[in-house]
Amino acid sequence: MAEERRAAGPAGSDRAERADAARNRAAVLRATERLLAEGDGARVSLDRVAALAGVGKGTVFRRFGSRAGLLQALLEERSRELRDAVSHGPPPLGPGAPAGRRLHAFLDGLGAIAETNAILFSAHEQACADDKYSDPSFRFWHEHLGSLLAAERPDLDADFLAHGLLALFDGALIRHVTPPDDPRYFTRSVQQMATALLARPAGRP
Image (cartoon, rainbow, N blue to C red):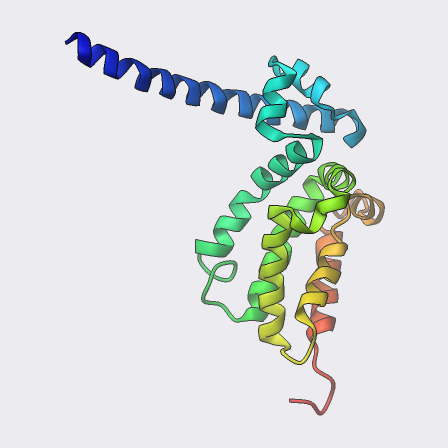
């Protein structure tokens, strides 16, 4: 029995450590959200986040590595539902619908995230400027858009067009163009641009 207790002890400790780590991660991300809501990305620092979350700065650093890593993690959390829907959900977001319909559904979903997280998008853009194109969320969005554009218009440079569409998802631009009485204006405009990009010239198959 003593040996069983000794064997069970470390496993129980590991579970407790994992639970603590999950709680700390959630607390850090919620603290980051609060700081973003209070102003802009400039307020987000590892020191402020740690103090607000009630954890040590070392905990934040070990988990996220940097301010950029922290904002990347928050953006990934905010967009995880969209990623899951694209990969495994029903059409038109998920597999099974024509590429054009999937493209507009994806832009609608991504636009909704951007419109409600414009400050996060701005802060993420600034913090991750040097390695934006290797960010996990951006890579997924770009790959998905590129595949849909290529399916619709194989005669165009789908990789470049995907970059062009994603460049529109700029937090400052979203806030600038969105009128108070029309919160989905940005998304509709991006969808209209995508429709224009995909339109085939008259007389071409």
